[in-house]
Image 1 (cartoon, rainbow, N blue to C red):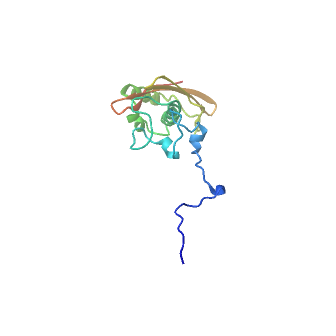
Image 2 (cartoon, rainbow, N blue to C red):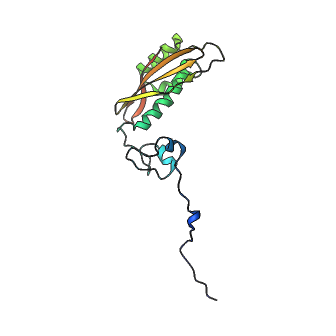
Image 3 (tube, rainbow, N blue to C red):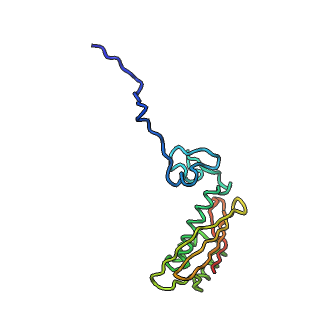
Length: 172
């Protein structure tokens, strides 16, 4: 008995799978600054300069989406420090010497004091802008019970590795 071997895989049009973009990628447009869609959802989140992974060249500055994500993540951590939920030393490596001095003085002064133990800070939308490719300035409204505060900060890309550091902080 002879059997013919078919080397071609059989595909059915109804079972054809299409790649769905990652939720975060879909919410922000799902493409990198060059307009290409990532092949894998994690490719959009990969670190720049990783072997075989797409990403902007070091020193080229953040894309618009990256600047917004960076500012939002830092704003959350900064508000936790200013309200006393996180020790200020955790942000030491993410701040310049001047930025850490400003942050420490705001913590000592109690710039964002809680009204009571049940008051949890609520962050409004983070408004950010990039005055230059290696800098991001942002502000966020923080609601603590009946009180409302504004926190503004500046992040700059520094050093040979291009690490982002907070260089200025204000809170009112």
